[in-house]
Length: 402
Image (cartoon, rainbow, N blue to C red):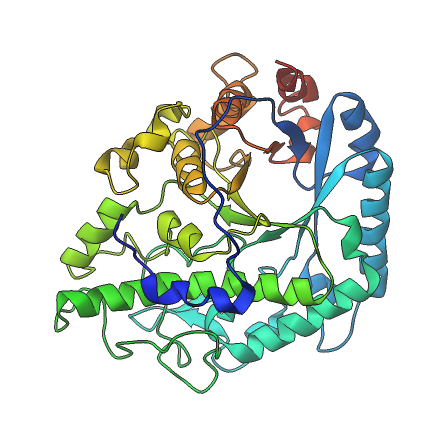
């Protein structure tokens, strides 16, 4: 595949990409079953049922509702939850809650993502603003002072202002002051190669369009790497789950978008997973997380032993399921893969599949994909729905045993 982010690969010096691991085809196995937003009161029963992975999540808005005022009780409660889950013999993944950004942060000048039309989003522009990153670093340091990060097996990473590694839907989101090479663009990021250019407007040669697209996608690489560096400096030594939903824009479609001058916004979310994972460290700590297992993409097709022979830039991969595609990308770089299903409330069709305990339901399909693709864990989104009558715990947990 032609490299999409060759210039950004030099950024490996920031964290260290590590030695490349020789990839191999996915091996069918039995992933560990888990839940998201795991409730401690359900943990003993879930552990007894074989659901051995758990996940808890912070909220920046709750922990720091005003500048410098920290809700230590909330942090202690989360630490107690982590300890209780560990006592039940469960691994623990932590969500940082940066995407639940406090209102006082969002009220700062130039704090929100802005699109090409000047529309302001509800989301913090952490990806483009070193001031916001500094505030987030202070928050994470306060978290680490109370919550023992050594008790956490993995940390879930999004795009700072958003919970997954994405920009918002429906536009191009690199038009706040700093994204256009303003004074607070993070020093780890290359400068915007065409700060006044609007995708689809013409006026740039093909190589200029590609440079801008690569820079735009590369900004998501940078914000992920920044989180990894920050957390490592705070003493975290576990793995990083990089949250990537859907098929996104596969390499052939990326090339086609550039050839059209980015005349539509299909790349506007930045969801170019082949480019993202190529530019992240390959040192054993990065885990590709499919946040849309059994979402109906690609007919929910599973991985096959022959997938490794399919080139990443083969257009056929655009017809695969998200689970199959992200697993293929991860395999290119020797990365482990984990996954979770779409949460309840995503759509009427997915909700019907979610509630279906049969072999055609979401739980059964998710387990088939997880096994075929060799996922490390399969976590159910979310814990509460396994206890409120939406889907019985057994409909998920029993399938973990085959």
